[in-house]
Length: 343
Image (tube, rainbow, N blue to C red):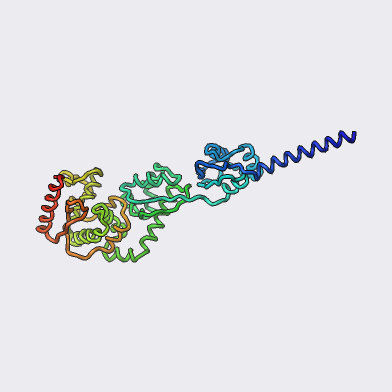
């Protein structure tokens, strides 16, 4: 009898040890594979526990799903609404390490790169590649009158909030978060290098500076030439002369692949057509680079009011103070095009 009892006790101890080892194994043994095709897990806002589990399975980040379930239960990780975000998962992590990271670890930021987008729709499409908000949510927010009023902008000059740069965001940002951040970065930008006071010296608001800078941006790819172009446009504004900027006509017509602006395009009726309407257009015709903004704020001082492309393939322009000089430059432009077989 004692022998039987001893066997039973020994068997119970073995079973207990086995169960204990299984529990220990579930908690501390690596359950994330040693090799991951993609180490980043993006958890959408509003996800529940099973959504996250399915994401982990789909990305091949779990070896033993049952063990993960048990540890999640013991660590009280299962909630109706789980933490969202983008997380970097390390190969070889245990269930305990994985759950601790998903519950309280740092998010892996994303880099949102803004460069030279022309339309708000392009900005929305670009940003949607990096954050949770999709392009529909972004463009809907861009058109929300209340949101724009709170930001101190309108639909026409919203683009002025976007200063080309690389910005770090958390992935689970919505459209409102994005615009709030852009407003903050806009404020930082204008507070540096006396930009606000320089705009006042030109008798322009920051939004007007940005709008003019967007035209300068599209006029020349040569950064060194932009302060001179900016100076010519500012001279025209001061003298009450129409800007007559070809890039504004391109924007007005929406023909962004237009290589040459013809007389028929100049007759296109739009507030953005600076051949028809004096002063600046209602807002930017594209995102403006920092170099173009600073070119408007620090223009070259001269008496030029005319300029045209040289047509020699250099991408640079000839400048003139009078219509006679401008006419001569146009003649040179036409000859250069003819030499290159473009006219």
